[in-house]
Image (tube, rainbow, N blue to C red; front, top):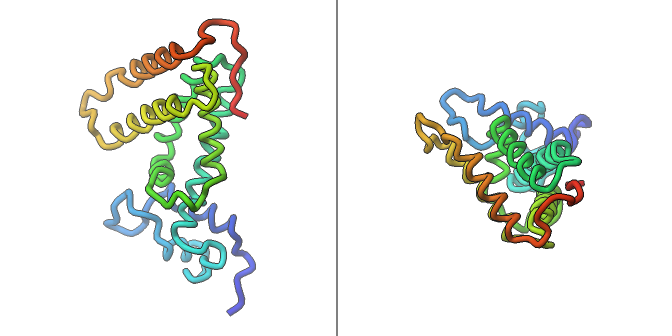
Length: 205
Protein backbone atom coordinates (compact mmCIF):
# COMPACT_ATOMS: atom_id res chain seq x y z
CA UNK A 1 0.00 0.00 0.00
CA UNK A 2 1.54 3.37 -1.01
CA UNK A 3 2.34 5.71 1.86
CA UNK A 4 -0.09 8.68 1.85
CA UNK A 5 1.68 11.75 0.47
CA UNK A 6 -0.45 14.07 2.63
CA UNK A 7 0.87 12.55 5.83
CA UNK A 8 3.81 14.25 7.50
CA UNK A 9 5.22 14.52 11.00
CA UNK A 10 3.86 18.06 11.36
CA UNK A 11 0.41 17.12 10.00
CA UNK A 12 0.17 14.29 12.53
CA UNK A 13 1.29 16.60 15.36
CA UNK A 14 -1.12 19.41 14.53
CA UNK A 15 -4.05 16.99 14.17
CA UNK A 16 -3.12 15.34 17.46
CA UNK A 17 -2.98 18.77 19.13
CA UNK A 18 -6.48 19.54 17.86
CA UNK A 19 -7.87 16.22 19.08
CA UNK A 20 -6.25 16.61 22.49
CA UNK A 21 -7.76 20.06 22.96
CA UNK A 22 -11.19 19.04 21.67
CA UNK A 23 -11.34 16.10 24.04
CA UNK A 24 -12.69 12.58 23.49
CA UNK A 25 -15.40 12.04 20.89
CA UNK A 26 -16.50 8.61 22.07
CA UNK A 27 -19.72 8.78 24.13
CA UNK A 28 -19.10 7.96 27.77
CA UNK A 29 -15.33 8.43 27.54
CA UNK A 30 -13.97 10.46 30.48
CA UNK A 31 -12.84 14.01 29.64
CA UNK A 32 -9.26 13.28 30.71
CA UNK A 33 -8.98 10.13 28.59
CA UNK A 34 -5.71 9.97 26.62
CA UNK A 35 -5.69 10.57 22.90
CA UNK A 36 -6.65 7.44 20.99
CA UNK A 37 -4.28 6.57 18.16
CA UNK A 38 -7.22 5.05 16.34
CA UNK A 39 -9.15 8.33 16.50
CA UNK A 40 -6.04 10.19 15.35
CA UNK A 41 -5.61 7.84 12.39
CA UNK A 42 -9.30 8.19 11.53
CA UNK A 43 -9.05 11.98 11.59
CA UNK A 44 -6.08 11.79 9.21
CA UNK A 45 -7.76 9.22 6.97
CA UNK A 46 -4.97 6.67 7.36
CA UNK A 47 -4.33 3.39 9.11
CA UNK A 48 -2.98 3.59 12.64
CA UNK A 49 0.15 1.75 11.53
CA UNK A 50 1.01 4.68 9.23
CA UNK A 51 1.58 6.92 12.23
CA UNK A 52 4.60 4.86 13.30
CA UNK A 53 6.48 5.88 10.17
CA UNK A 54 6.78 9.33 11.75
CA UNK A 55 6.51 8.61 15.48
CA UNK A 56 8.17 5.48 16.80
CA UNK A 57 5.67 4.96 19.61
CA UNK A 58 2.99 6.61 21.69
CA UNK A 59 5.50 8.12 24.15
CA UNK A 60 7.30 9.85 21.28
CA UNK A 61 4.06 11.39 20.01
CA UNK A 62 2.98 12.50 23.49
CA UNK A 63 6.38 14.11 24.03
CA UNK A 64 6.06 15.96 20.72
CA UNK A 65 2.64 17.29 21.78
CA UNK A 66 4.02 18.32 25.18
CA UNK A 67 6.97 20.04 23.49
CA UNK A 68 4.61 21.97 21.24
CA UNK A 69 2.63 23.03 24.31
CA UNK A 70 5.84 24.23 25.96
CA UNK A 71 6.73 26.17 22.81
CA UNK A 72 3.33 27.88 22.76
CA UNK A 73 3.52 28.72 26.47
CA UNK A 74 7.04 30.13 26.13
CA UNK A 75 5.96 32.21 23.14
CA UNK A 76 3.14 33.74 25.18
CA UNK A 77 5.38 34.33 28.19
CA UNK A 78 7.91 36.14 26.02
CA UNK A 79 5.23 38.37 24.49
CA UNK A 80 3.58 39.22 27.81
CA UNK A 81 6.71 39.95 29.88
CA UNK A 82 8.73 41.93 27.36
CA UNK A 83 10.12 45.25 28.70
CA UNK A 84 8.81 44.70 32.24
CA UNK A 85 10.88 45.04 35.40
CA UNK A 86 11.96 41.71 36.97
CA UNK A 87 9.27 41.57 39.65
CA UNK A 88 6.54 42.76 37.27
CA UNK A 89 7.71 40.24 34.67
CA UNK A 90 7.52 37.43 37.20
CA UNK A 91 4.03 38.50 38.26
CA UNK A 92 2.85 38.74 34.66
CA UNK A 93 4.44 35.36 33.86
CA UNK A 94 2.43 33.79 36.67
CA UNK A 95 -0.83 35.18 35.28
CA UNK A 96 0.09 34.13 31.74
CA UNK A 97 0.84 30.62 32.98
CA UNK A 98 -2.49 30.45 34.80
CA UNK A 99 -4.38 31.73 31.76
CA UNK A 100 -2.70 29.14 29.54
CA UNK A 101 -3.67 26.32 31.93
CA UNK A 102 -7.25 27.59 32.09
CA UNK A 103 -7.67 28.02 28.34
CA UNK A 104 -5.96 24.78 27.30
CA UNK A 105 -6.62 22.35 30.16
CA UNK A 106 -6.22 19.09 28.21
CA UNK A 107 -3.00 20.20 26.57
CA UNK A 108 -1.71 21.43 29.94
CA UNK A 109 -2.53 18.08 31.55
CA UNK A 110 -0.67 16.19 28.82
CA UNK A 111 2.33 18.51 29.19
CA UNK A 112 2.58 17.45 32.84
CA UNK A 113 1.83 13.76 32.41
CA UNK A 114 4.67 11.41 33.51
CA UNK A 115 6.92 10.31 30.67
CA UNK A 116 10.45 8.94 30.23
CA UNK A 117 12.90 11.77 30.83
CA UNK A 118 15.35 10.55 28.22
CA UNK A 119 12.93 11.11 25.34
CA UNK A 120 13.48 14.87 25.12
CA UNK A 121 16.59 16.08 26.96
CA UNK A 122 16.64 19.20 24.75
CA UNK A 123 13.86 21.05 23.01
CA UNK A 124 10.97 23.41 23.86
CA UNK A 125 10.51 22.01 27.37
CA UNK A 126 14.13 22.77 28.17
CA UNK A 127 13.81 26.19 26.53
CA UNK A 128 10.85 26.96 28.78
CA UNK A 129 12.86 25.91 31.84
CA UNK A 130 15.79 28.13 30.83
CA UNK A 131 13.48 31.10 30.28
CA UNK A 132 11.99 30.69 33.75
CA UNK A 133 15.50 30.25 35.16
CA UNK A 134 16.45 33.59 33.63
CA UNK A 135 13.24 35.22 34.87
CA UNK A 136 13.68 34.09 38.46
CA UNK A 137 17.41 34.84 38.36
CA UNK A 138 16.63 38.45 37.46
CA UNK A 139 14.54 38.68 40.63
CA UNK A 140 16.93 36.87 42.99
CA UNK A 141 20.16 38.11 41.47
CA UNK A 142 21.44 34.53 41.31
CA UNK A 143 22.53 32.72 38.18
CA UNK A 144 21.08 29.25 37.68
CA UNK A 145 18.73 29.68 40.64
CA UNK A 146 17.21 26.22 40.28
CA UNK A 147 15.63 26.21 43.73
CA UNK A 148 13.91 29.51 42.98
CA UNK A 149 12.45 28.21 39.71
CA UNK A 150 11.30 25.01 41.41
CA UNK A 151 9.52 27.08 44.09
CA UNK A 152 7.87 29.28 41.43
CA UNK A 153 6.79 26.36 39.24
CA UNK A 154 5.52 24.32 42.18
CA UNK A 155 3.39 27.26 43.28
CA UNK A 156 1.89 27.70 39.81
CA UNK A 157 1.30 24.03 39.06
CA UNK A 158 0.05 23.32 42.55
CA UNK A 159 -2.54 26.06 42.25
CA UNK A 160 -3.65 24.82 38.81
CA UNK A 161 -3.95 21.23 40.06
CA UNK A 162 -5.91 22.14 43.21
CA UNK A 163 -8.24 24.41 41.27
CA UNK A 164 -8.86 21.81 38.56
CA UNK A 165 -9.62 19.13 41.16
CA UNK A 166 -12.22 21.30 42.89
CA UNK A 167 -10.34 21.25 46.17
CA UNK A 168 -10.97 24.96 46.78
CA UNK A 169 -14.69 24.25 47.14
CA UNK A 170 -17.55 26.68 46.55
CA UNK A 171 -15.65 29.66 47.96
CA UNK A 172 -12.87 29.33 45.42
CA UNK A 173 -9.25 30.30 46.12
CA UNK A 174 -10.38 33.49 47.94
CA UNK A 175 -7.46 35.60 46.76
CA UNK A 176 -4.93 32.93 47.65
CA UNK A 177 -3.20 33.07 44.27
CA UNK A 178 -2.36 36.77 44.57
CA UNK A 179 -1.38 36.47 48.22
CA UNK A 180 0.86 33.49 47.55
CA UNK A 181 2.39 35.18 44.52
CA UNK A 182 3.11 38.35 46.53
CA UNK A 183 4.79 36.31 49.25
CA UNK A 184 6.80 34.26 46.77
CA UNK A 185 8.09 37.23 44.78
CA UNK A 186 8.91 39.17 47.97
CA UNK A 187 10.72 36.16 49.40
CA UNK A 188 12.68 35.46 46.25
CA UNK A 189 13.60 39.12 45.79
CA UNK A 190 14.79 39.18 49.40
CA UNK A 191 17.33 36.46 48.68
CA UNK A 192 19.09 38.59 46.06
CA UNK A 193 21.69 41.30 46.28
CA UNK A 194 20.17 43.61 43.65
CA UNK A 195 16.86 44.49 45.29
CA UNK A 196 15.30 47.82 44.37
CA UNK A 197 14.72 50.10 41.42
CA UNK A 198 17.00 50.71 38.52
CA UNK A 199 17.37 47.21 37.20
CA UNK A 200 17.06 46.57 33.49
CA UNK A 201 13.80 45.15 32.09
CA UNK A 202 13.75 41.38 31.89
CA UNK A 203 13.70 39.41 28.66
CA UNK A 204 12.79 35.76 28.09
CA UNK A 205 14.11 35.70 24.51
